[in-house]
Length: 119
Length: 211
Image (cartoon, rainbow over all chains, first blue to last red; front, side, top):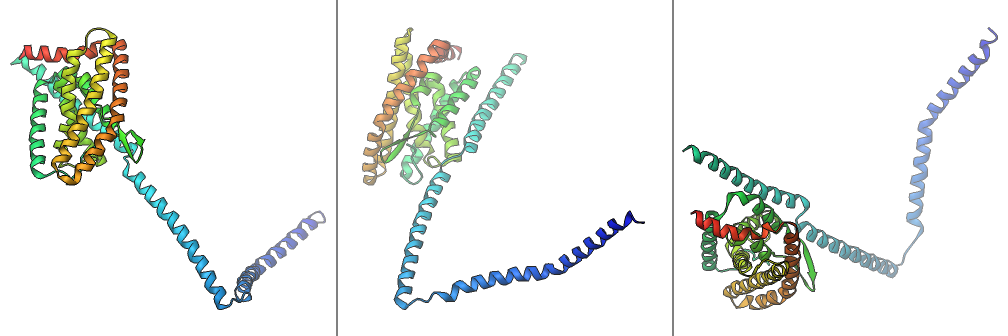
């Protein structure tokens, strides 16, 4: 009995700890949520702009937007050009077609050659 | 170098189609069936050669290889080879429109046939004469192709006159590159497999004799 007692104690303690942790989990989750919401809430109302400041801010943002749009358009044009060029699939397909056409022709020609002497 | 859809007038389209059909029919009659594998390989290399674009100023140019095709295949088979290669380029890569297919195959095929005849005459038996003949044939083939292109564009109206001039100017370096490439290819083939170069001569002679 005595030798079993410490292990039993350990089991009890651990199970209690586990239940406590499980019970606390939702609370912990909410706590993190609260933190996040508080942080995001903090950034919004702190800075207050005057009207002219807002205007310059918007203009700057617009400039950034147009710049990024321009680079995007450039990328798209480059991509389009790349897509217009035939890829390795087209090339191999074409070579395959050519070999197939001439292979068939050679086959037909050889059959003709074989059938001629019989006639 | 490929003529696109809607550039040429209808009369030219029909004329070139008729002429190139005649050329293909002539090729089909003259071809020796034993040489079909070689024709296939040369056609495949012609098909791929136009994909290697060399940037040149505002435009880019690519090899045309009419001279080399004429040299390797002889005048008889070259036209068929060109036509097959161009059909597949048109379908798979949208290089040149389907309606302009006749004009395109005339543009490359006629110089190829002429270069075949030219090489037959000037080939000689030594390495030097072969290489010189190949260089001249290669350059001449591209020059003729560019001239035919300019002529075809000229028929389609005054608007394309400037394009025709531009096409001629752009192909001056291609003529030189083509001459070098043809000479290099022929000098290699002459050392490795010289009977491949005499093939065109045997084709024209034996096939005519056999029929």
